[in-house]
Image 1 (cartoon, helix red, strand yellow):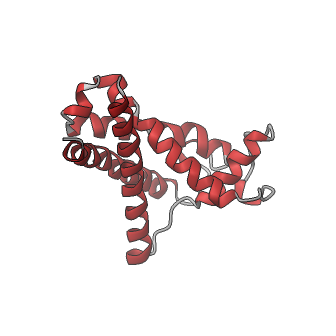
Image 2: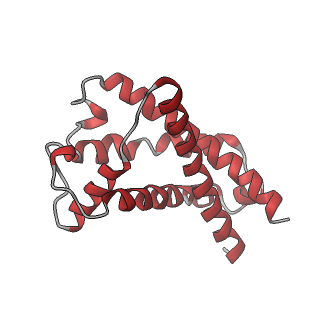
Image 3: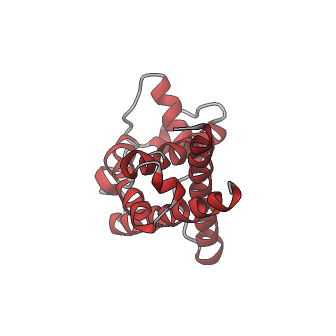
Length: 164
């Protein structure tokens, strides 16, 4: 792939992740629904760098210096890395002519990471099974990842306008 494709992937990942953040903000401000504190994501990643992956409760784990900043950085890095799946699975042509179905499929597929890696490692169980309301967490996960998919598509369309 040429340099332009990498710039597009970067922008698509950042744009889709930002769409998630706007959605999270709107949910919190309008109906009081909160989602994962990105500081806890940073705490988890910080502990991984120290050799500890699994926690009984990440909220009770030792605080990591700058964990919130680390969490935000990791959140966007993950969003960018997942955006790489589109040209990997559908070819560079998806970047030139994006379609929504691959975007949604990738986004729904990205739910596997929190359900089977992050949530269990943070002490929430597989697919949030150890949380007080696992079904609600799962629905919110599906919704936020769907927003990520819409963000992948929308940002890809926008990048094609910018790169004309």
